[in-house]
Picture (tube, rainbow, N blue to C red):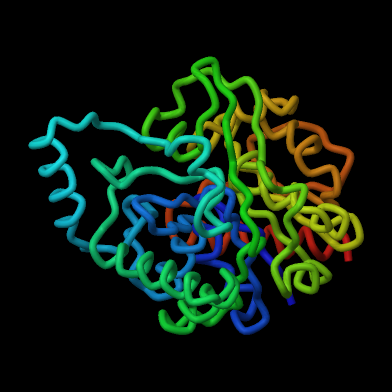
Length: 330
């Protein structure tokens, strides 16, 4: 049995080769929900949906976001209407008093859908409508995620990190903004002062999460701060990881991040913006998988390989390195 912690695109790319070493029916993936947003009244779970679409064989692998071949007629219509009305483009974070109204799970991450700043495909939107409707009927995010996973034919167990709201907020020199505004709308350009996982202190791990973390755990090459950090901020998760075997894969190749604003976010939380910073980000890790050209010294066992993942063959190679690392710490 093995459990992966997943956020962004790093871990999903790794999962393309995971079946080489780990049987899907003995694999659990816990997904980050700190990046979730409510956009135009619909709850969007980007990291959960990437895994659902990947497992269902419909993921857009060019962007690692949304459904391959999806149309965007509704998104286009929203912009056409907005332009005709003279509405401003860009993210429109709802007023503070609106952030804690309505469904609890969307607290601190509510955006207007007018001229929506995230391009949502039409079939993708159908998933968000279904998710939001089931939540409004009284189902938990865990229950809805399980049903969606079954509907798309997933063979792994997929769990959200929590059924409670945890919002990844970036404090910048231009003010506080949700991670999706910081990265999708602003391209990660504002200077980062600090990172907050609002709601995490009162959140609880979703059902099954702590049990899954009692198995061998793999942290894929995801952003340690905003892809994995929200999970570690939920009480009970980090403590459990100290008591199990944990292997973390570096998201850096020769000091360069795979993707995203990893470096500046690592610096904002007091960690070196390279593989050396992994010991700060993951102090509970028992072993690391790092790039073969990375000569950083660590206090835990290290397995080195070419960790850049462009296809399933690459993913299988890194998975084999993970398997070797787990053997060293079992």
